[in-house]
Length: 146
Image 1 (tube, rainbow, N blue to C red):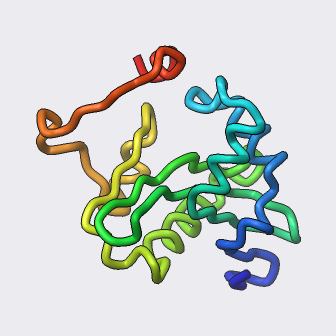
Image 2 (cartoon, rainbow, N blue to C red; image 1 turned 180 degrees about the horizontal axis):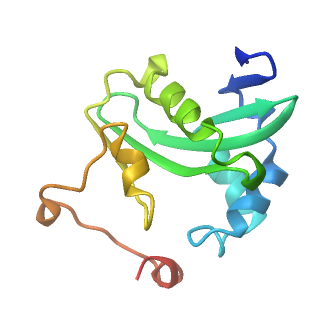
């Protein structure tokens, strides 16, 4: 863990992540409501995990799916309700964007329904040529994304 302030730490260690908290929080989001605990656990196992911890308790989380060269997909970003509005989102994203293994990524992407302005502060912008992208969505995911 990396100390940020007296009681605030950043971690990239999967063993530090509170999977129960992560699943519980994501289950209430528009994008995570259909997930099972086992699916979330497997997703975490197969991606880079990042968290903020205050007084030993996890207060923020995100994961990144990446090849560590060309592509990174920022996923499942959240700050627990009682810690929102205190700058923790910025701290988390700053640490992810400055993470050594992710410094030379050519293209970052993310999906958001309502937080565009938050991510624009970190250089994200709407896709300039959406006609160059395609997607394949399962019937289950259509409930979320369509």
